Image (cartoon, rainbow, N blue to C red):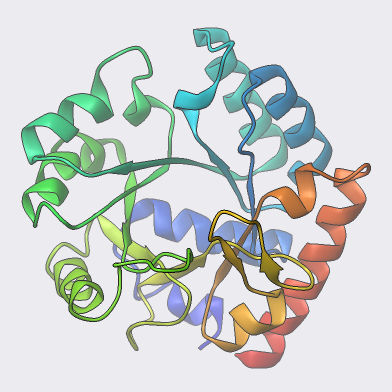
Length: 252
């Protein structure tokens, strides 16, 4: 199904905005800016912002975090028209994750369009996050699968995650997964660990090529070191965007 057709099925406002960006910019590329310097993240996002639909961060690894970083990040989001995904991977009871999402020094819910959660604690984690995220129009991805070798996120765990997503589909709009998990156009599949040539990283991470990820039913490809570790991130991001988008068009 084409992205334009899927717009009529999505319930979450962030999901709708994401599809609109993908259609307008002709990109299904997300960059994982897994860097410890906020200044470096901003520099790279400004270079590659035109190529991506989502910028994925780990805010808690920054060594130079200030509120000004968030201000500048939002400016880049508006300049280049992408969404912000805080890869927080919440994994606690509903009351705790609600505070982690809205309070502390990061106030994630105030600036991150997207965040994600493990389903180990059960549906309470979704309810806790939704209580503060949904009123702001935010969206949640569930970690239905993970890419490292030996992951426990598979089988019954994955199926239980799918059932939770169905129940809370006003807030949950997709999955972190290696392949399409459910034949429902409202759910958007994000695949991490994408890199030209595939391979691994020595710490059990396993990479998918863009073509393989798209063939498996992925919608958004998350590329990290394959972009930000090269000498010319802008040029490399363009290559990833072009290959991923062409593969997407051919497979839909």
